[in-house]
Each structure stands twice: as structure tokens, then as C-alpha cells.
Length: 210
Image (cartoon, rainbow, N blue to C red; front, side, top):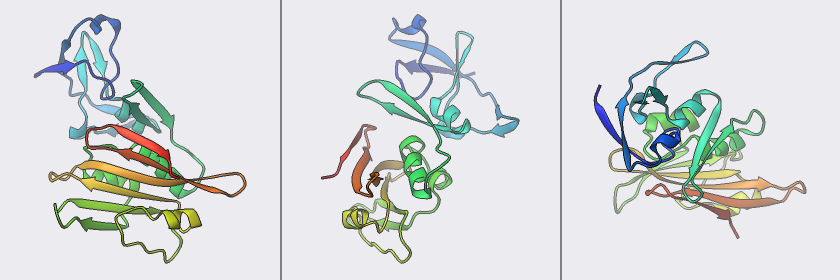
């Protein structure tokens, strides 16, 4: 098997044991194993790599979470991996907002995004760079239309839709950045708008929209 140099990073694979904390890097082997979940075979494809180090198998958290009915996210600021079960209740828009936060990620191909979110509402090319942008209108009322590439905050506030997602693609056809605008509903029926953004460098930001 091909030798593979793995730096001390977190978020792509399960964190290692204390035996490697003192090293700057480790030598691991690519481990082309097969996976079955409850008897069903699952391919991890080119998005993920499985490693063998010192007799232990290291598997990407996201791959395992996705196939066990959960999702995963990594917070670079706190160095924390969060694994959250897939919601079984809630509207279709609420479940897709969850999927954006815990299953969508940079570097995904279009076919993988469609598996998570379905077909986009619209597909546009930016004139200046020819960069492709997908827009999803989630929880939109029948007949809703918005031709722009900026969030329809008026529509979100009025209840014309529950969330809007904009995905920007790299020239190589991979997810480069995405911006999610979504509504949280209060017990009194109030609607508050929040943002969740994943930037091209992998950093994230989120806040309440005022």
C-alpha cells in the first residue's frame, strides 16, 4: 500500500491517541477497506480516505456519521467535532437546513449535493467570472419567485419561504462556498432570520440578521 503522510489535523479523520501528540506528523497507510452498514455495502469514493496506523483503522467522521443517520461539523475556533442525529420531525425545509449544516461541505461534487438537497431551484453563472451559483428556495410558498443572487430577507420575514441557500462552485466543479439564510420561529409566531456561511478557506460564520 502507498505510504501517506498525515499532519496533525482535526476534522477529516478521527482524532488520534496520545501516542502521536508529541510528533509533528505520522506515517500512515491508505487502507482500501470495504464498509457495510446493517448489511448494506457503502462506497466512500474519492471524497474520503481510510487510514491504517499502528494496527488501528482511522475513518472520516463525516462518512461514518452520514451512514449512521447523523451528521458532523467541525468548529475550527474551538477545535470541536460535533455529531448530531438526523431530525425525524419538522418540515422539509427544517430538515434541509439541518443537512446544510451537518452534511453539506466544501469539495463536494454536484451529484453529492443533489443526494443531500435535491435539484437546485435555479442555476446561474456570474458574468464576471463565469462562476456557477446554485440557489435553493426552501419551504417556499406556491408561486414564489426570486431571480436574485442575494437573500430575499423580505420574503423570509413575511413567510414566503423558510430558508435560502446559495452555493458557489470552483472552476473544477466542486463546492467552494455556501451561504444559508434561514428562519427560526418563536412560540409566539415571530420569525427571526439567521445566517450560516462556509467560506472558501473552510472557516464558518453565523449570526442573527438584524
